Length: 212
Image 1 (cartoon, helix red, strand yellow):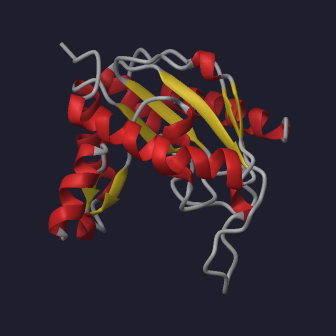
Image 2 (image 1 turned 120 degrees about the horizontal axis):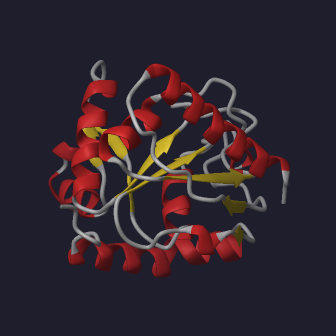
């Protein structure tokens, strides 16, 4: 039986970080807009699937869906004493190079068992135009194993935040669009996972096409 909400300490840290830094940055510096927040289940396990174009995406997406999202992070970050405790409270889980797929799925399932929302970038890596062209089945597989619904989310404009040779993030308008919840697949059969992955891809790219 999964917990309804994330641990209290994690929720406290999330709220503190969100309102002191991420939310002001998003709404003021990036002139952020959010659409579809009413679609977000505020408790229980959830797989958040999205596009990915910037290192700023994880905290922004987590802030906009009104609950912490657990993302995988490089194993090296967990060797830093203070940072280790903070990012674990914030939901991050370690993945080492070369074993990312297997360890990421196992760690994600543990988070979902505790009632977390787990974030998965559908293409796995950043894309220059924010669109998804080569989606991976990982999110659908995690959802199938955990019997958790999926939530398609699109971040528009974040591909312009980071510019080569620039230290300061670029002041560009951002828009986060949240789609309708998609039910978990009934099995881990490849055909069903592929079908669900394409459904998530179409939903996210469709949200991106709406633009600002």
